[in-house]
Length: 271
Image 1 (cartoon, helix red, strand yellow):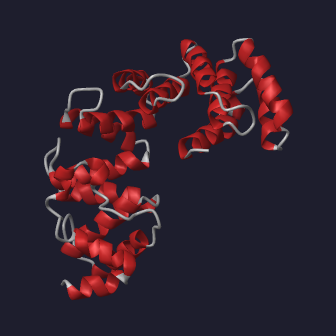
Image 2: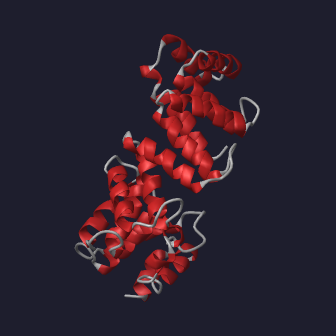
C-alpha cells in the first residue's frame, strides 16, 4: 500500500466518521474493528446508492488492493462519481491518479486541473501539489510566484511539505523576496513535524546564524535528527530542483558525511 493511500484511508475512515449518516458510521466502525468483509459490502451498497463518501472510500480500496481486488480503473470510476457529487477529497485523488497514470492515462495537465478544483475548496494537499507543479512547470506554465502562493495557503493549514518548500523558497528568493526569518519560521514548523529536508536546512540556518541568532547546539540537534533518516541517500534539494542546490552545494557535503558519521563532529571540523 502506498503512503498516500494509507493516509487517505485513515482520513476517510476515521476523520470524517462523525459527519456521516448512521449506515456509513456502521461501515466505518466495522472497518476499524477489522470486519472488512461487512464493511466493504456496506461501502459498495452505499456507493451504489449515491453516497459520495462511500464512493471515494471504495475508489481508494480498489487502489489499495488489500480488502478487494486491485483495480485502478474501477478506482478511477468511483472517484469520478464522488467528484461529481462535489467530494473534494475525491477530486484531489483523481489528480493523483492522473499524475501517476493509475487507472487512467498519465496526464500532468489533467492532474493539475483536478488539484486546482480541490485547492479552490481550500484542500491543503491539493494546494501543496499545485505549488510543486507550478515550481516545476509540470502540467502548467512554470511560475515561482504562484508556487509560493499555493504553498503559503497550504503551509498555513499545517501541510508539512508546503511548509518545507515555503521555507526553502524564502531562503533562496525563488518566487518571493528572500527572507531568512520567514525561511527559518517555516522550516522549523516542518522540522517539528518530522520533515527531514526541513530539519537539515534548519540545522544549516542555525549553524550560520541566518534568520536569527547562531545556535550551534540546536544546529547539531536538527542535523542529527536529519542524519538518522534511512531514506535520505542523495541531496535533499533534488525534489525542488537543481537551482536551489547552488548556494549550499559545498555544505551539502557535510550532510552526506553527517549521515554516516556524527553531525557534531562535522560541524566542529567546518566551523
